[in-house]
Image (cartoon, rainbow, N blue to C red; front, side, top):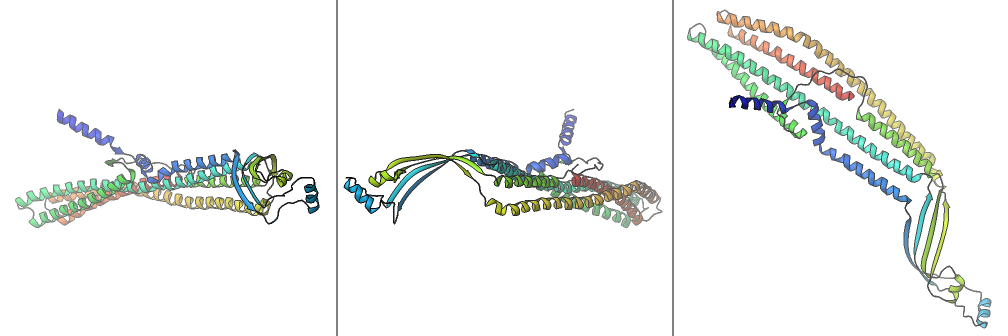
Length: 421
């Protein structure tokens, strides 16, 4: 009873550990180091947008200045003499001047420039995310190659086991016949050598299986113990490849850049406040009499319009339009090549389907020939070489059937990869 429960537990664990193609693809995406860039791009974009938003905050500038001038504002000599007669010492401004101050600027209206710059930053982040999605999507194709390669090796190992059993059965029968003198020892040796050759083939298949299983496990970041053969899938109309979403994001970026160019042509309105402590101040007459430092301040509004933006606006707009046309051309090229791939894959699926329709009949005929040869061997009316040839022919037919089935499934999922449907 304990032994039975142990066997059942092992079977359940084996079944639970079986991996499907979709599970391996999802695991490979999670395990691929590049996946971490999704979060990095998102955080970088958020920081960039937040920094642009700070353009609405007051801009405070601290300044400190010391100068020496070759000439300064002064009273005419006649006026200076007159003032001296009145008892006023008119020294004039000093050539060495100093000031320490603060300059505060506050944007009131920017023509939509900050909002446009934020949208450009968001669309640039979306383009980077879409480019990353394109790279990560290619992981699916690499998983497909290894997954179906493993399935093919597992089928070949199973057929190799069947072939060993058939040869072992013939070897056992010949051993009995040699003992009874109805078969030659060389016939037995021939079958034994053929069986050992098949055992060697099994060793090569197991080695290839271990290597590919280890590669797939490392790529997916999980332990691969058993694969589930996927079901056949039909082609679905449409195309949902990430490359198309990348092109869409590039077009949205071009639209955002267009809006930013329009915003650059509009005037800006802002208010400002300036204050400094130094010499001379705004009261020039007082500073010509007394050279004491003083506090000075100014507030106001300023309307600015960068006329120079008009010089390059036409060329900048043309560059954005070229980017848009380039993205549209990339879409046409991608769809053209993608349609060619779909045509090739559909033709391959149809070809393997036709081959598989004949495989079962070929196997049935080969099996009948092999059984007839074994019957003839029992009656001593067939050469052992013919028997070995018939056994190998049946096995080759079964191997071909397995290859056709796996290749057809692979082409179906390659078509699914090509359209992402």
